[in-house]
Image 1: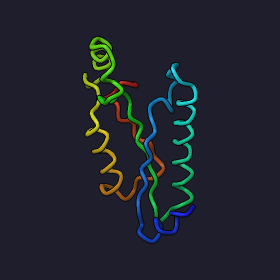
Image 2: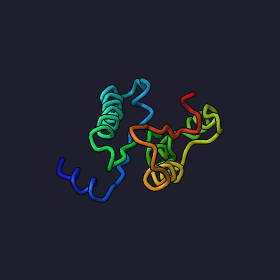
Image 3: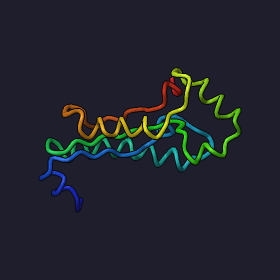
Length: 122
């Protein structure tokens, strides 16, 4: 609420970071999945509430090669890459590229959550 006026004046864009866990059950963390599903819904509601001056979207990364996956056994990472349609796991740069696109690359996208998982969730 506090930032809403500044965002409206600047005609800014908000990009929330959700997760594919917000669309699917992951089994390992019910609370995590529920929080990401809530963030996806919040994104839609904020898009309505702040329009037309502010666009609000989200990204939903799947498996991303980060410190989290560094602890995975090599076989687990290979399995994740094989499951993805694009045959690799995402990098932080893959996610960042979508965030930049949503911030500056379009003016007609709002209330959307873009899945960035290389087709893993298909």
